[in-house]
Image 1 (cartoon, rainbow, N blue to C red):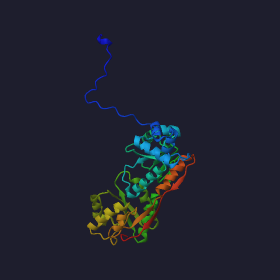
Image 2 (image 1 turned 45 degrees about the horizontal axis):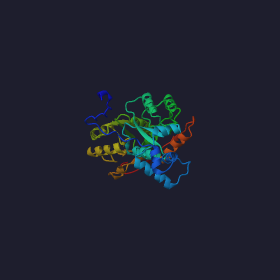
Image 3 (image 1 turned 90 degrees about the vertical axis):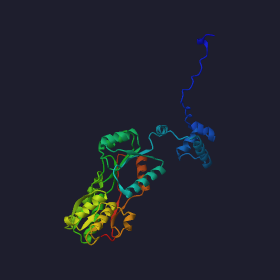
Image 4 (image 1 turned 135 degrees about the horizontal axis):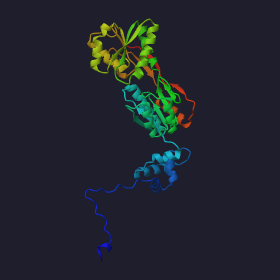
Length: 351
């Protein structure tokens, strides 16, 4: 027999080659293992509420899926539903503090309980147009913008054309075409200044963080404090400070020369830094300088003297998630405005 007539031998595996990965499990595999139809698998794993399926059957399907390592295909699910279940949440690139971090964590858990997938997107360095195009590629059903990136009506329209049923902005102002969750930061500054003015303070230093990005919060807080001080015949002026011991010490060292008798320190964390620096400088609190922060953190109550603060009342994550869910299920050209927070001054020993 000639060499050309011989049956070809299978190729010898190359040195170092690996075993091919096992096939990806399908819903048909799950159905066979659980002894149910593929439709039942789909209903169970997609949490369909319109179809009555017994709990033992649901358990069998989930156990079969877990044994096989099967998860539903997000793209296929989106095609069937006509939209994704992705809620896009741009990740803040600035320090937002424990209060807002806890609030955003609670919101994400609440959305997950409503069967949404929350995707955090790092948008650092992107302009509004660039960020929106990147977000739109994921085809989110909703976008919750924290206000760090300034959106326009055109940006909102772009997201809606890409399938977003709801665009929600959080911040001091609304955007045409988007639902507005308004957080009135001016009220925080106004409450702090009113508290100090009521206690006879007339020369208030308002700490303005030097860190980039925090002006979204600090600028309206300064404006609120100034409006109250001006109305009372007092004054409130900005005093820049970075979130560091060195910056706080430098500010405390020149405090007497500034002629100020009170400090509204942006939030409790800046207030605590500044209080320690004042004490190191020999300034008595509150005799020489009254100090108030904001956010009402637990550690502020453990200081000596205890820190006065502005307590900020935020909505629960469940409440905000229900607003998002309603906007997704019943999209409308008529947008809504919701005021998200209330503020009140809490008097303690530092004032």
